[in-house]
Amino acid sequence: MKLQKVQLKCKNLHEFLQDLSHGILDRLYNHPATCLAVFRELPGLAKNYVMRMLFLEQPLPRAAVALWVKKEYTKEQEQSSDILLGLRLWHTQLLPGGLQGIVLNPVFKENLRVALLGGGKAWSDDTSQLGPDKHARDVPSLDKYAEERWEVILHFMVGSPSAAVSQDLAQLLIQAGLMKRSECLSSYTRGMDLVEILSFLFQLSFSTLGKDYSVEGMSDSLLNFLQHLREFGLVYQRKRKSRRYYPTRLAINLSSGVSGPTVDTHSQGFIVVETNYRIYAYTDSELQIALIALFSEMLYRFPNLVVARVTRESVQQAIANGITADQIIHFLRTRADSVMLRQTPVLPPTITDQIRLWELERDRLRFSEGVLYNQFLSQVDFELLRNHARELGVLVFENPAKRLMVVTPAGHSDVKRFWKRQKHSS
Image (cartoon, rainbow, N blue to C red; front, side):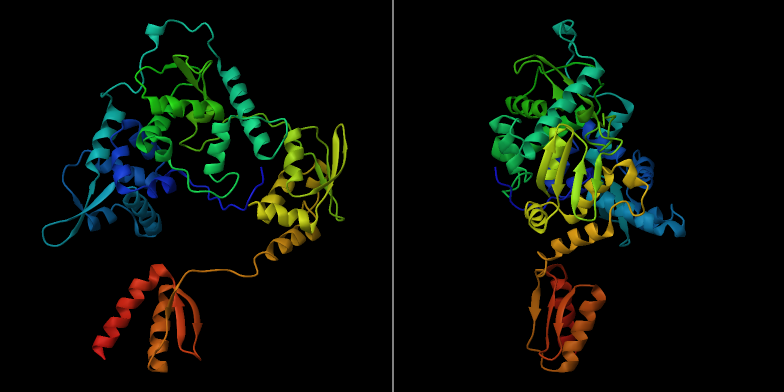
């Protein structure tokens, strides 16, 4: 499978949720597990705001809320406010007298109370009616299973011929943009409800490692989604039709982004990079060798050693596949042999500089969207509007000789309003 250039942005939980529509967010907050997961990941100050407003029924003036924080922490206060508003945990409301008020999202407030104080429906069905599991898995075996599943996926993604995954999982990786550019993955195209599967993921994050859970009461789409989690190593299910499953450490740490203990077979470092662009990798790991081959040209291979060379063509091919120069350098630095670690810097500057230069060769032109302003009647008008756009930080390009300028699409409305006010006042 040929890789094409992709642009992936890693997001934390809050950034992902803020990109969801308001309707989906409001539906998500109908589930106590979601509310608790979102609350758990809030910054400390934002958590304080939520707890102080959790049992208040009346909106508070925004100015009064600002007084809860000392002036030297204004920046942290603004960041927390932006997060709470972006996640729709705060709703703005106009108070008598024209003051702006803030109230906690009533649906979120109700379900967070349930999560913190108890009550409500059980998040999963009891497995006692199924009896003891003859094939129960302990924590070490679950960790091993999750690690093996991830190894298979990583081998497949780097093109190892020995790796095999199901056609459905391969299609999922493609649609997610991990293997080639495609339409953004949509749960709806797979007949799934986004709110249902996100709520299930949040419930998994509060599961107990090593405990089995029942599939009774799950919808068909959720059972189908469970199979995807099974292939990714997020849950263990002995057979597809088994009536119980075990969440692994990967699933429990998913929403919090916490990394569980993993076995690093190359924690000592195994790569030596020379100034002649040669790489010596003392490893027999097929995965590590395949990763090195993504950005270098393989020369020799021995039972426990591979020799490769970084070339302009190999680096630019890697960049075309979506790998950045910084990622290549980070890979080499974090896996450097102990001999190289004693050097300062760890990697030869000639190598790191050249890799970055090869990347820059592909980025000689940079494209930016914008709105063009021209046909100014005077130089004064042009400079007035240009200076205003510059103060707003939305100016992309200017040509004073031809009296034309370009602003960002986001700043277009503000610049347009300013220009209309100036025309009316003149």
